[in-house]
Length: 102
Image 1 (tube, rainbow, N blue to C red):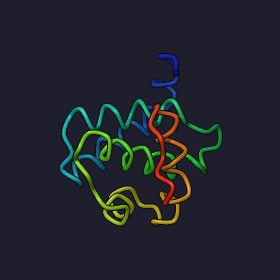
Image 2 (cartoon, one colour):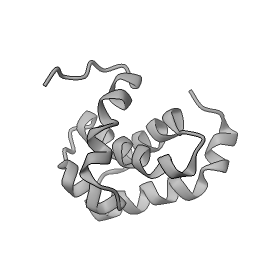
Image 3 (cartoon, rainbow, N blue to C red):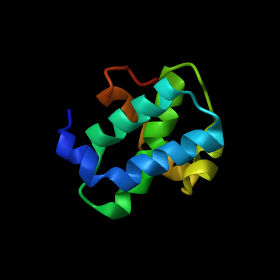
């Protein structure tokens, strides 16, 4: 879980989630869940935050039924598809879901 201060300290990243949500035409619930996932899993290093942001958007879209491809999310968030592939299962599990074995 995260603290309210985390949301303030990561305000620019939350704004980036909103922008990606606009590009992907995601609903309010999906954007909110993406922000929660990001804040729960946000790394200390700014260098890694973009990848966690993208994976959080991808996982939130999966779990709310607004599926988007990894490629589409990567394009909307400015990361490579590989960045999402390397992090999405970990974020899915942190949200209490079992990641698929494939």
